Image (cartoon, rainbow, N blue to C red; front, side):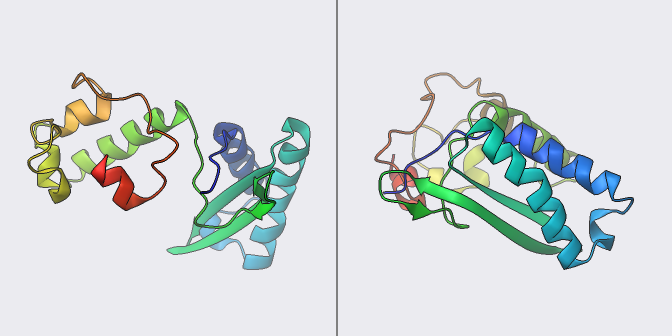
Length: 161
């Protein structure tokens, strides 16, 4: 099992966007080599300063995903970070989820009063079947766990849980 790590995602993403802005280009205009240098220049000092053992960064550029992996996912085994590493990002994910959910609702991807099971069929028949997208996004349905147990480390296990 890959050990989940708490990372300073907000600082990393802020540093990355500041670096991109200082380059005087939008993300879609930056060449791959320049993008690599910008990400490294933003992330390497953060890893050292915050003593972060590992971090994964994804940048969407011109519709193409670029992945940057740093350090280890598990200090005990030395397993390296990859695109498949699971990270525990903590409460910052709520702001990201709310932003993406609001964007999807405005763009017509779903309605806030839709049942979550309309968009995730595997929730049908579960305790989540009656939860609306608004309740899911605001974590206000009641009775939801604060986090998954450590044993839940795959999509199939998450759905079963």
